[in-house]
Amino acid sequence: MKKIILILIFLHSINLFATEQRALFIAIDTYLPENPLGKVVRRSWVNLDGCLNDAMEMKEMAKAKFGFSNEKNIQFIQNQECTRNRIIEELNKLILNSKKGDIVFIYYAGHGSQTKNSLSAESDFKDETIVPADAYLGVKDIRDKELAALFNKLLDKGVVLTVIFDSCHSGSIGRGPL
Image (cartoon, rainbow, N blue to C red; front, side, top):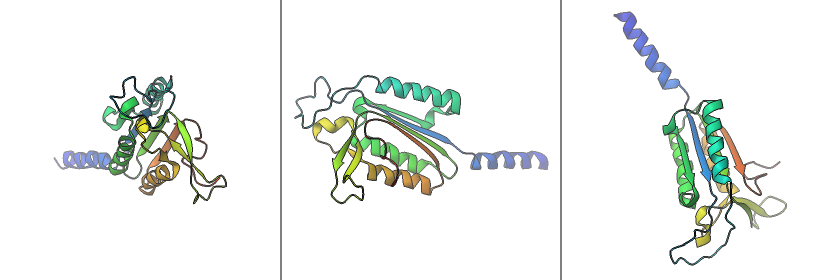
């Protein structure tokens, strides 16, 4: 009986310290819906073709080759779901739910851009950005400084983080000074 109890305690403790693999896939092909419901279009971005497909392929590769098999730990948002607020909300969920040793993978496919920042330490005084799906409504892009702050919260927790941006101007979007 003591052996069974010790084995159960041991198995339970393995689960307490087991790392989780979490993934967030963000794919935006549609930046201007066919019928924006009478909304005033403030910014115009060309719709893309292939971001959704690329993100689905990356998800399948993460599952098949890297063991991201727990569907409850994989979030996939696409097109008009990818509002500025939703993207930040999903990143904050990753921060909240992750713990030391967890593996987090984030993949973004969509438009990238740049915006002026007169206070930037970068020589071009520009911030790199990702463009959310609701940008046509005048919603601000998500700046590299905002993303870095969120990513640093994950890193401060001891999470193993991999981020891929499949977008223009992605060279320094999530990195510090080169």
